[in-house]
Amino acid sequence: MAGLLENAGQSLNNEQIAQLKQGYQMAMQMVYDKRIFDSMMQDLQKLPPEQGLAQAIVSIMMKVQEQVGQLDMLVATSLGIALLGDVTDALGQIGMQVGQEQQTAAFEVAVQLWLAANSGKYNQEEVIAAVQQMAGSQGEMQPEQPMQDQAMQGGV
Amino acid sequence: MSAPAIVAGLKFIGAAMAAKTAIEGLKEGNLLKAVVGGVGAYFGATSLMSGGAASMAGTAEGAVSAAGTATGAAGQQAIKTAGAGLAEQAAATSTMQGMATGGAALETGLSNAASQLSGNAASSFGAGMADLGSFAAEQGIASGASMSIPSASSFMNDGLSAAAANGLGGATQAGSGLLNMGASMPQTGYQLGAQGSGIANGAMGAFDTLKGYGSQAMQWAKDNSMMASSMMQMGGGLLQGMGQQGRFDDEMAALEAARKRRQLTGDTSFLRSTRYNPNTGRFEQVA
Image (tube, rainbow over all chains, first blue to last red; front, side, top):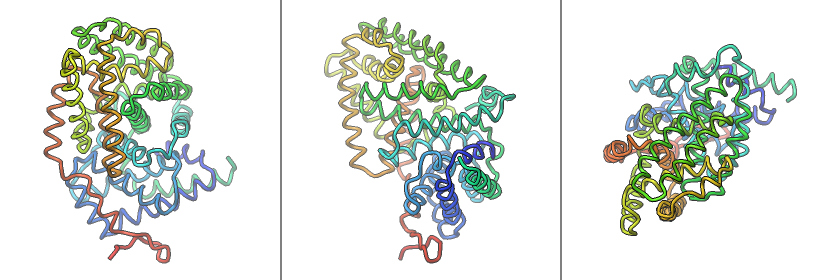
C-alpha cells in the first residue's frame, strides 16, 4: 500500500506535498479529536459501512480543502488513501468493522463523492492524468505480480 | 520533479503510513481499481445525466487516452474485463431490444463495440465501468448509495411512465433507452458512429424522453445540497450497472427498500459545527 502512495508522492511538487502534509495533519486532528470523533461516529453508525467510511473520508477532505485550498486530484487521492486506514480504524473502535473488500468499495464511493462534491472544479484531463500517474506507478512497481491476479483475489 | 521534492514526498508518505496501517491488507490493484472505477462511474454518470453524446465522446476519448497507462498483464486483464462486461451488456440489451423495433441494429452496434474494445486497450476505465453492475450488487454500493435512490428510482419510473404514455412500447423500450444511453458512450468514443446510426427510432424516442429527465436531474442537483448532488451522480452509476438486465427488477426493489430504511443518512453536522482556528492549529466547536 505504501508503494501506491509512495509513487504518487514522487509525482508531487513541493507545493503539493506541503498541501498534502498540512491536509493530513488537519485530517488527523478531526479523526482523533474526541468531540469531533464522537459526533462523527454518531452520524456514521446510521450508515452502511461502505457509505459511512466513504462519507467520512470525503467530509473530512472537504473540511481540509476549505482550509488549504483546492486540492488537485492526485493530492486528493493520496490524502483519501492515507485517511482510509485511520477512519476504518476509528469505525472499528465503535464496533463498526469494515472488511477489506468493503474498504475498497468504500473508496470507490469516496472517489465518486469527491468528484461530485467538487463538480466543475476538475476537468477530465486532470483526473485522468492523476489516474495515469497512479496506474503508471503501479505497472512499474509490480512487474512480476500482474494486477489481474490481485483483482481476481480481491473479488471486487 | 526535483530531488528535494521527492525526498519531502517520501517523508510525508512515511509519516502517513506510520499513522495507521489498517489498510495494509488491501491489495494495491484493488485500491487503484477503486479509484479508476469511481472516476469512470462519476464521469459516466455525468454524461448520462446530461444526455450529451458529445460529452460521452469526451469520456470515451479520455478512456482511450488512459489506455496508454495500462501496462503488461494488468492492461490485458482490463481489456478482457471491459470486453466481457460490454459483451454481457450487449447480450442483455439484445434481449430487451427484442421487443422493440430496430433492436437488432443496436445489438450489432454493441457487439461491435465490445469487439472493438477487446481489440483496443479499454484500460482500467473500461473495466471499472463494465464491472459497476455486479460490483454494486456484490459490494453493497447499490445499497450504499441510499440517498441517490429516490432520484434514481423516480427518474426511472418517470421514464417508464413517459415511454408508455407516448406509445413507445412501454417499459421495455424505456429500459432499452437507458441501455442505449450507456451503450452510446463506447460507440461514440470508439468512433462507431456507423453502428450507432442503426439505433431504432423507437429507442431513440425513449432516449430523448430520458434526456429530458436527465436535464431535470441536473437541475435538481444544482438546486440541492452537495450531498444530494453527489448521490445523484452515484445514482447515474447505478443506472449503468443496471444494464445487466437480469438483475434489474431485483435491484429496483432492493433500492426502494433500502431507500426507506435509510432516509436518515448524510448527516455531516459534525463538520458544520467545527471551525479551524489557525492560532491554535486545531478544529474547535462553533458555539
